[in-house]
Length: 120
Image 1: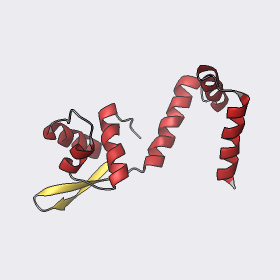
Image 2: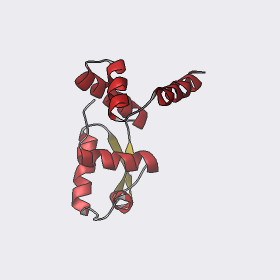
Image 3: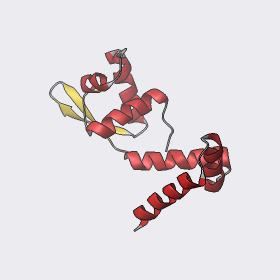
Image 4: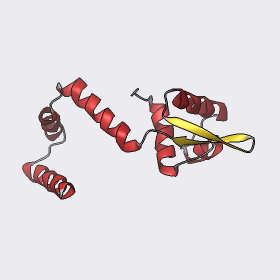
């Protein structure tokens, strides 16, 4: 699966939330300053070429919808991050974030409790 640019990911976040939208509806959800219609339209077509988005005809225009689920992309991105920056070690990643974010053992215990709840 290909990585997304920041602009592509921003549009995907909107489509994952809305489930489907035309270009005008995507722009409406974007922060100021709003990008040009043609810019968003081009990015959506790039997302289509990367097989992240598909479309259906709606009158004279198109409605776009995500083909790749957010969780699938998130998992792939996290795996790439862990492989690329932490030599595939989840332990190294957690250690890094604990040091950089000044987490203590109570924070880690709370995270472990959350993980264990989701496994049940």
